[in-house]
Amino acid sequence: MEFTSEHRLDDGVLERDFTLGEIPGVLWTPGSAPNPAPLILTGHNGSLHKREPRLVARARHSAAEYGYAVAAIDAPGHGDRPRSVVEEQVRADLLRAKEAGEPIEEILDALILPMVERAVPEWRATLGALLSLPEIGGPVGYSGMTAVGIRLAVVEPRISAAGFFAGGFVPGVLREEARRVTVPLLFLLQWDDEGNDRQLALDLFDAFGSREKTLHANLGGHVGTPWFEVEDGARFFDRHLK
Amino acid sequence: MEFTSEHRLDDGVLERDFTLGEIPGVLWTPGSAPNPAPLILTGHNGSLHKREPRLVARARHSAAEYGYAVAAIDAPGHGDRPRSVVEEQVRADLLRAKEAGEPIEEILDALILPMVERAVPEWRATLGALLSLPEIGGPVGYSGMTAVGIRLAVVEPRISAAGFFAGGFVPGVLREEARRVTVPLLFLLQWDDEGNDRQLALDLFDAFGSREKTLHANLGGHVGTPWFEVEDGARFFDRHLK
Image (tube, chains in turn yellow, cyan):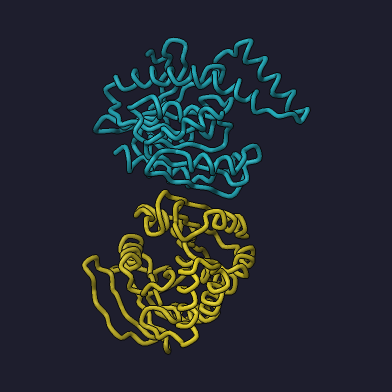
């Protein structure tokens, strides 16, 4: 893991870009921390960049106010990373199918599943590298995109708690895998999310194998999650990571 | 309003029994409050007593840790109050219908609707008396039983925010009235509540007219609400009453 830039922000948080092989990431750590900080991996949605402003605001807040180290990486084909010819093709297919009003589930499977297959090992490698830093001590939470989070929570025993945002497509194979997620879970749903089937999201909440799981649903569309959910998320992680 | 007993609890909270006409109630106020406290009316469920231990624990916590005045009253036919012959008859009908596996919706309507019709004016009278006390300043929230809370939130303009527990039967007429509830709302659902239809609860959440409404659902049965929801509820009221 190599740090390629570093600067100290207004709120005292140290923000560092890093690369781990071909994975580009950002790490936010608290300004003053007497002990190694617990870690939150924050997996952004869809095609968002690791420096998407709302993601950055949440990450900085978790570091400055709650003392977490927070890391984001660009998933394969996202943010700063090149898309493969296959990905470009599938995205073009998706656009065409949407415009034609055709079913898009199979195309979304073809887009999301390979991304998950690649992103999860990358997260695990990143996690290993982050935990070797003296300023990070674990335990570890994951917060963000559900599809990646399900697989990561199932295969990575160092994940102790997870906050999933129910605003993205989750392939059927991962919906099945949700039954094997057992860590404490906070599942965040926007009640009127235009592109997200509410009943599918509720069914997914029902499917998770976790004994402690909480659903938070708020009125409004995909990007309307109220800021107080950032606070609620931090307190959820406080209960399980501190 | 007449106070009939008063004692200071370990956590500094002042606990006073009161009567207002035939209405018996309890008032918890913070140990030290520089200013008049905002008020939460806490309406217990079903046939519970105003001193039901979980209700008391929540009320004391809201007073001691968050600085709220909290009031509970026994609804007509509940707690310390006598049941009418009609109520006893309806309750006997309910028991018989349940044992026989017969539909109980009409019987529940006959039990709950008259109670709501009587309880809501009593809450409003109690609210008026409480707001005349120098140590209580408003604004006012309601927390508790959904059926009573819907009607109270619709007719009583002094209610500024409401937390409803989705664990009790809500007559159809009140489910319709839910569309006229417009105050900020926190709706609390136990995902595996044995006696509560989950889909009906989700439909009710959907129906509320409030622009700001949040659903919290937790795994577990009717009485399994985790303690952290008490904290979440207090923070919800903090956002709207302070």
